Length: 406
Image 1 (cartoon, rainbow, N blue to C red):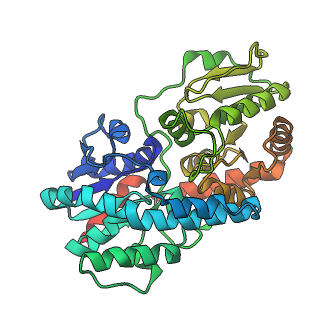
Image 2 (image 1 turned 45 degrees about the vertical axis):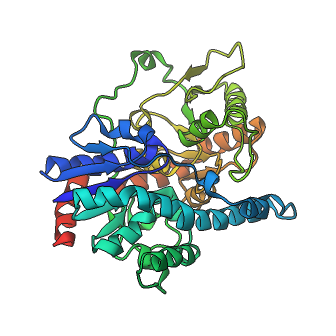
């Protein structure tokens, strides 16, 4: 079976797909990943062909001036209303110019590779139309964007593109998932707001087979709570691409990751009865000296480390949330943008942690202490891990997908 993966966004999107791509390749399938240059590196250590046919991924650059003004001029809205407006505008971008660009980039690859199945990034709507044009089954892989965006908001833009390519319009918003979707969390723990139950497989603990923790972690104190804080990969990547732009410049409306990291470290200073590891993702740290209970590192193998920590102070990306469910790790969620605010609310709803709504150092510290002290949250995370362990391993997806193609 020939399988095409499409991957957009940050390398974390590729890491969400890699276990499935690896399982398909090991079963003898011919696997090709169509992605961007930064994400291509994720696949190159495995038996997966890669083409960097997608020139870049920047939804903001596809927004029109009127769409930008629609967001920035609404100063009367509260933060929740502004986030909802942002998602609506981004729905128009993803289902319009972004989908058109991805379609144009991926369609020649599809015609040449002739896949029997397309497993697409949740933000890739161009491949929805490619599947319809060439009668190829397509399913989205685990994605925070897929969980957050309302398919009804995506339908008008997709129908315009369908008309451009001589395809019939659809009335059903769920036409973007005609054969379902793939997820790595149990149905009762789904983070999808609008989509039906998925084909669910067990979240993989180790994505990078070569990853190990550094030896220095063995010397960390174990007679106190161990806290891991990380800001994720997407926000620092966007910050690196736009160093001259002001933080929050439209249409992203994102906080400055350097400011967020500083607040996290200042909160960690207050957690002086814990050991705190902070992954900076290469962002500068301008607080010096730091107390001895704080350990700064650029990055760590997160899925491995989560097996041993008492609290994960996280931005709430969907990869991080899934890894926390798999390892029974309580979460204090400091959401930054996109689907992360919805993820934070869902984490709290499921009793797996708490959302941080006060992003000051004192606000972050308060929630961290509340989660550490809450035995109910600990019990809930253990139950979530047990539910995750009831799911079939990722290798079983191969037979399911082959049956779907047949």
